Length: 292
Length: 294
Image (cartoon, rainbow over all chains, first blue to last red; front, side, top):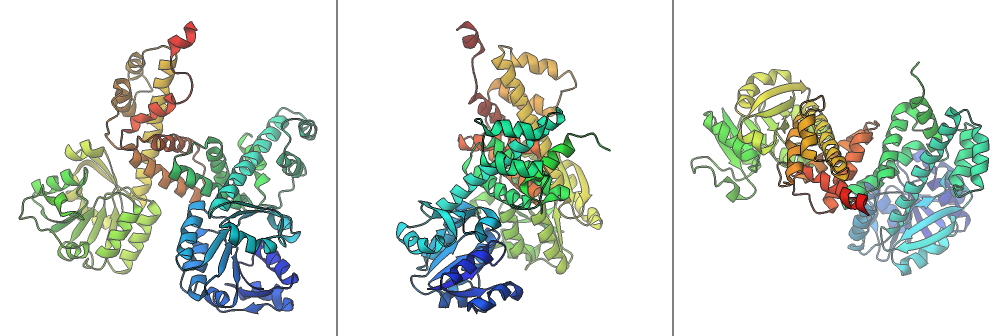
């Protein structure tokens, strides 16, 4: 199959390579030519614009930073829509505002282009190992066509509902992980400031109702003081911004997410945006310690 | 010197009347012609914003949000003469005000953000507090104008600085309304008369204009707007987005916005912000006597 892929960053690159390894022909466009280097040996074809990519592909994947970027590469000048053929499917794997996904989906459908939103959870490691969780919104018949390709990228693939539903699921994921990381950081800071062995607390809690994968994995990395990403704090800040935009639009009470979003502002503002989200622990430690 | 005015709503209308009463020559543009019916026929009505800009040395706007102001600025810029001034009284994002000012500066004209505090009552009584951002040398041309509209006009800094001051004004004021609502809620839940609590507090260190005015409306359960709560909601959404962009935590503001979100969802956006009391009443035990007799 001829597959377009736009957005060859940390996440997009390994995913596109999985598709090439599965025997598909890749059609690529990248803002920076250097992003195309890893694809020299897999017979990929480089193009001058997203529109050119769309002319050659049956399905185009996008994996970019935020809603304005998705709009630009799909609906902008020389965007995918400008080069589309009837029946083209656009699969956006970026994490963006659900309402923006619905708007982009509707604009593409008006031009005869199918759209599914398919944000992922699992980070760079999950992308490299094809173990991502993929949350999909779109028509069932379109999902059925894309599903064999998703299976090269992830192990848990769920059609949640119509367009935008994948992004809603991802936002829920980010509420749980954002608040969860903050809760583990609070518990660890609480234990440490009480002069209690944090490792023992974690070990005890893993056997009870407070067990969670975040307590297990993120908790271990907090103990190791290994703040290498993983999932960068500024990305969690962005995802919680999306959550709160929707809370303000729909009139939703999300007090824990709201407080957590403010703490992520503080993490990023304190210069820890490029570290893993578990830098939350360092923020709480700093705020709980007398000024030097 | 001819002054143009766009935005003839609850705030704009009394401001226009004050400018006329002070003897300024005026022209207006309004989306719906009927909005200008309160003005005598000799006041010129421009056919479009750009037409208004062509005939005025200063154009004032007083509309709702960032998108409205940016849309008008994009039209006015093609009609304004060099060195003329667009004074915007609306409350918008500081970043949008800075962006408009930069575009104007490239073409040799000026943008001044001059948001006000004091509501429609302040506009009518000429008691507005005006906080403005823009080039300092514009003071000489703007001060006589501002003197017709309010009791204080402070130049806070460069373009956008007025909006930063207004955002700060909203943070302090609406957080205080929330605190007053929480005090009223605690009093009622404890079986204590909030009117007495408020009276006592107004004599002490917690005394504030908000406790006086908004606390008074809560006490009387009079939720008719003053300033419609939806406008405070809009301001808080803008400010929290700005805080995220600047990477700073505003924990109280974020909590207050959540209460405003619930207020909007309840359908009280057109009511007064003292409705924050009703948001609190939607959760928890409401009747002290019932709780303590059963």
